[in-house]
Length: 361
Image (cartoon, rainbow, N blue to C red; front, side, top):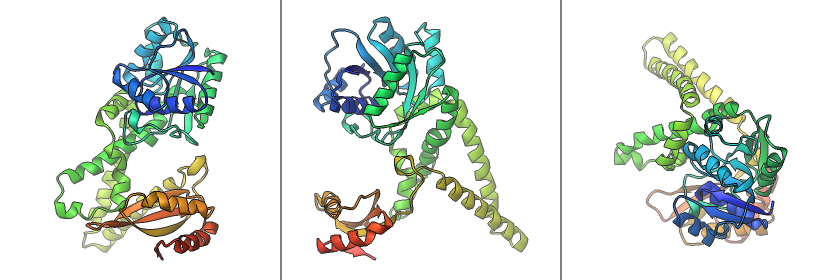
């Protein structure tokens, strides 16, 4: 791949363009908002000038409702040798493209499973997809050249290709992506009218659960509107679990000991199943979650403190696998939790103490 066209310069499109440009591909950028390609180009994602002729690959990075229309328009003007979209829903856009008379042989639906709560080109990074799954949903008639271009795109973005049926993909993301957004928003919505005395007690747990509730509602309306049935199916199962859990918790208030025991068993069953499900979630680079050791470091809010911690860890030769930050309420300080390989923890603690950091035991 030497040339590419990215149609849609939001978070995903600009991140793809940044990754391709960094690896020598000439990327042309376009968007219905003329200011966004200019912003993306200023970040080094490519050029907002139109290509002189057909490019090798056109990447359609627009909301699901617009994928078919944009793809068909690009195909009519002969913009590329191959066309891939990167939307989060796959079955509907393909059927819509067929209804519009689009060429399904030169089109391949894909979905990189990576993102952020923030949107727009300014949130984009070239490493957004590294180590993340990237689904391909080829049909039997998909041109081999287009499939190879899609695989090259994924390799250049350092992602991990996974081949799936389009409708199976939509059912899967309803469970692992779309429903979590709804559940996160449901919990966060409880905070909107909560007393200030309760909100002041918010800690890491509520922060973890509600993190993705900060996402752009307009973007999620587009996604959920394109995959409503599978999401509703999963939510119905969650609702049944919630109803059973409410009954179990009410039983804990009963005077009858047998009812309390049944209630405790119900709550325990949910917690057990939840832990078993969490254990199946892949960890870094798609591997099974590792048992990391946590090194907790006291930190102030002075500029550059986080960067200095990571630099000192790097100087010690320790790879930080994950990080969490806990802010102390009402104070100019907090706690940084560095998750590292258990064997590396003693050396990291010693190195950080030598550099003046305060470690919490």
